[in-house]
Amino acid sequence: MNYDAGFSISITFAAVRKKNVVLENVPVTAYAAEGKALARHDGKVIFIEGGVVPGDVVDVRLGKNKKDWAEGKVVHFHSYSDKRVTPFCQHFGTCGGCKWQMLPYALQLEYKQQQVADHLQRIGKLALPPMEPILGSAHTEHYRNKLEFTFSNKAYLTNEEIRANDGEIPVRPALGFHVPKLFDKVLNIDTCYLMQEPVNLIRNTIREYAVSHDLTFYDIRAQQGWLRNLVIRLCTTGEIMVNLVIHHEDKPNRIALLDHLLKTVPAITTVLYTINPKGNDTIFDLEPKIYFGKGYAEEKLEDFVFKIGPKSFFQTNTYQGEVLYKVTRDFAGLTGSEIVYDLYCGTGSIGIFVSRNARKVVGIELIKEAIDDAKENAARNNVDNATFFAGDVVDICNNEFFAQHGQPDVIITDPPRAGMHEKLVNKLLEIGAPRIVYVSCNPATQARDLALLDSLYTVEKVQPVDMFPHTHHIENVVLLKKRDNN
Image 1 (cartoon, rainbow, N blue to C red):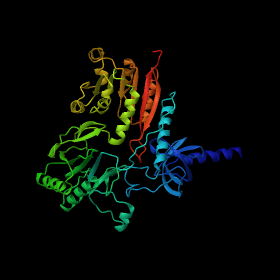
Image 2 (cartoon, rainbow, N blue to C red):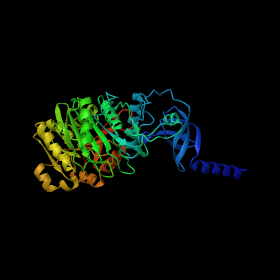
Image 3 (cartoon, rainbow, N blue to C red):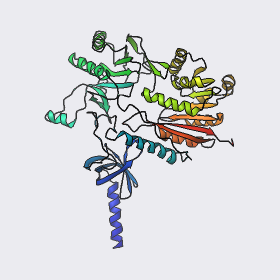
Image 4 (cartoon, rainbow, N blue to C red):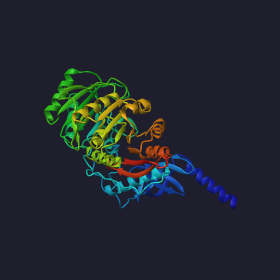
């Protein structure tokens, strides 16, 4: 009997570990990292994709299936959580963005705050002060200042559209967003709530003109076709910059299309076009050409004005970008006598933002074009106490450099999602600045780096900032202070 019972249990767990197993009537209890929902089944942790909310009861088809945990997708809802709200976008559930529209914003903030705490405690294993309440966004719609849309000769069709076409899958052109995990399929976007008008008018005008004039949309598999990407930036200053990316030059059609756009949307302040014959969509190594206007846009943070070119990086939520930078400036604790080093400085926005409170700002960034923009932005704002250098911090920050520019009293670091390279972390430990302000768009890699810095620094303050409502993404600012015994 005991043998049979043990054999039955082993068979049960072996079956659960098989692929394509469907678990039924699973209660969803919480959220985990990267916006995945969390459930437990017979002691096993299940990470769930598919627009679920804590309180839902679902059937889940397992994908990755390990001994103690599994990942899966929802295949059926038995009941819905009373926490749900109705998504406001017609493309919700198909488009890859705004995956948390079905959650009330207050709950989004609660889960994001918990995500930061979990990462810092579980990955960083850090002694933490009480965390400041997350700073939510005053704008939960129309908050972005930049979007990139993709042309494709193969539109993604919903099941309803396929049924309406008697089960056939017609080939249609599309201008919109890539469908998750389908690199060659693009969802036609009618109305996007991430940016204010006239962004939808710009995109829809170009698509309608291109379709009516038989202009070819790009085929990413065959790598042929004319129209590739459309990048739109709308600043709080009212300036609108449009960059049309095409595969090859076709001057008559290019002029006709862009003239039609300018006639239809006269609010546009500058138009560029970029020829990209490469196999990928990046344009960092290409040269956008001005068709109309000055070729760049201007954005403001407080009373600072920043020039933004078609290849410039700038915080994509201007409103919350200003909030984020105020937190950074506050954490830096500047009195006007400090030398501030701004690492990963980009186009100099953080360094310039804190410059009035510092004796000197030294910005360092790998990309030379960004440093050129930083120097110009400093000049535009009459900031004469900031200098900017292109290169790797590990190589630049040597004794000779410090002798010329001074040892930092405060270091501000704002790395990409991958976090800081271990060599840079070691360099920070070697420099030993009294304070470090670490701005992160990925609390998981931030926690990893903070654990490495823990030998010399203590975490004094933690402030999450929500830059991207209706997504699981979260920014976090941490103030580190050098330990007294070092």
